[in-house]
Length: 139
Length: 192
Image (cartoon, rainbow over all chains, first blue to last red):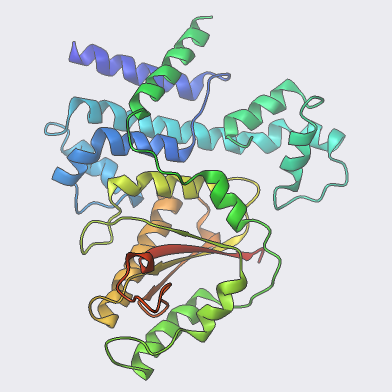
């Protein structure tokens, strides 16, 4: 049964990262899950591990037999969520290329000027681009 | 259709996992609003700022610094934001209760409003304890925040500089031991 739950959660995480029209969540919301599900385990087993450089994740993995079921399941989910958001953000410029050329001519790039233009032009902007902006968490 | 249903279930799962966990009032947009719109050109390097703090202890030894750092004062007019980040006791490891805050900084720095601009991540302590020790700890903690942003959240490292000022630049010099002095300060140095 435990295995089933784990597989199910992992499946959902995969779904989050692969389905083109599924939601993504921000980095804060993703890492908050790790704190909620693994906070106690981190304090018990990984005090000397750093959040950076995969330190916490490696420590939790090493201690997986001692770590709570929920933490073991969710740490995998969290990695997937962060990757999904990063992937979505990397796509925006490409997907919105045409819309920028069409609706944001003369807007100088940088400091969010392009994004502000696209957000303002939302009703005219292509669905693809609007979705890409949503998935990147840029709205 | 199956995909839609699954996506819905995933979203519901997320909600149930996050609900009940203490919510900070801090938001991504608050950080963006405080940091964006860098106009002034201030030509101060992170190394120079770090050196100023080290020199200050040598030049004005004693339990507390008699004055603030002129170089740090120059940064006061820049777009900036102070956050509280909790670390494990006597350590540079970020405590789980502050993961969300570091994530919010990552959320803000990844938006087109701030991406590509240079930021200082400046660690400060209160005045309890020895100044050299506090300086050292604040350097390690600022570096820990930078490292987490760069590795866990993939914020491009070339734009982020960690500096530790220990207790050399108190936020509330009248109350040197006050909690308000313990903070991580994000400063926008603009496009370089």
